[in-house]
Structures are given as C-alpha cells and as structure tokens.
Length: 202
Image (tube, rainbow, N blue to C red; front, side, top):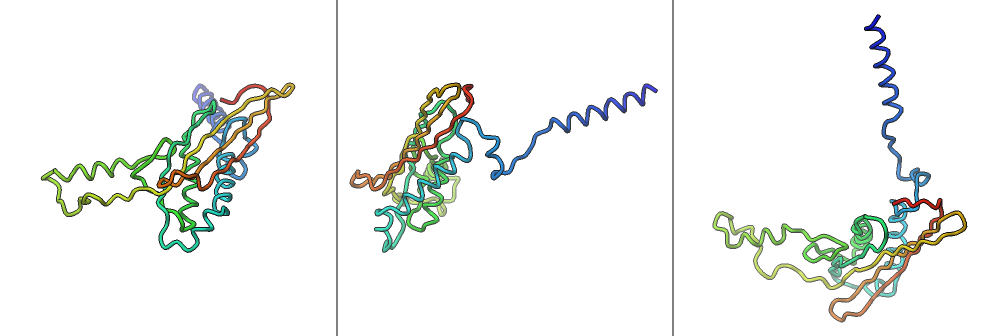
C-alpha cells in the first residue's frame, strides 16, 4: 500500500516537473515573448537596417572597382543603455555582412570595446625568443596588416512615461571612419521604439 502511494506521488511529481520545464522558442516565433528591453529581434533589425544603408551608400558604390577588400577594425561601440549586453552581438552581425559583400575584411589584431582582439596574435609572436618552439611556424615581424577603416558607434536609451505605460526609445548610431584621413565615410542611425507596461524589464 505504501509502495503504491509512493509510486503515485513520484509519478505526479514527474508530471509537474514536465509541465514546469523550459520551453524552447524559435527565433521567428519569439516576438510574442518580447519585452521593453533590447532583444534578439532589435539587434537583428539594427544590424540589417544599418548594413542596408552602408551597402547602398555612395562610399561602398565607389569601391566597385577595388582590387582587394578594405581592412576593417571594430572600434568602440558604447552601450549607453540600462541593460547589460555585449555590443559585439551587434557589430559581428554587421561586419559579417560587410565581409560577405567582398569589399571588406575584418582584422582581429586591433579592436575597441565593440569587438575583441585575438590574444593568440600576441602569444604566437612571443614565441620568437623561445628556444623550445620551432621558429618555422612563428610569424616574422611586419606581417600584421593595419586597418584602413574603423567601425564605431553608440547605443542610447531614452525612457518616457506615456499615461499608464512606458515608452522606450533606442538609438543605434554607427560610424565608419577612414583611419588615414580621419574622415567619416558613412554613418547611420536606426531607431527602435517600444511601448509597454510601466514596470521596467531590466
């Protein structure tokens, strides 16, 4: 009798556990679970709108006859919002499409807060003086290629109370700079506006 009651209790517990489990949501269907905060869809829109503006710009059209791609570095992209997330989530989406256009190539030797530098570049060069390392595969001095362009930006958040709800405006600002001249060759702004319950989502 006790054994039967124990088995029934265990089975009921497993059913409850299954009902309260984690639910996987497809990216396409996840909009219904959105909040006032920055989510996957916001980053996708900011990236796609910015890359569309860039690839259709006069600067990129002027690169049509370029014999080799421009070397690009990700500089500082400041997160001036109330949320904690890596701005590299945005910049990597953008630079991936830039590289796929065939007009740009990304360097990992130089990076600001919006990207990340590959530490192995320094580590492998430190092996030049190490007698335990076969020097055949160690890069010689003068091989790292300096960037020609820098991608920088800022993400800004502005909160406004609208009656019983809260409006949140996000501004995704990006700039592409020619490092030789210091001149801006392209810049763009993507705005995303959300309205929801007054309680914050961060």
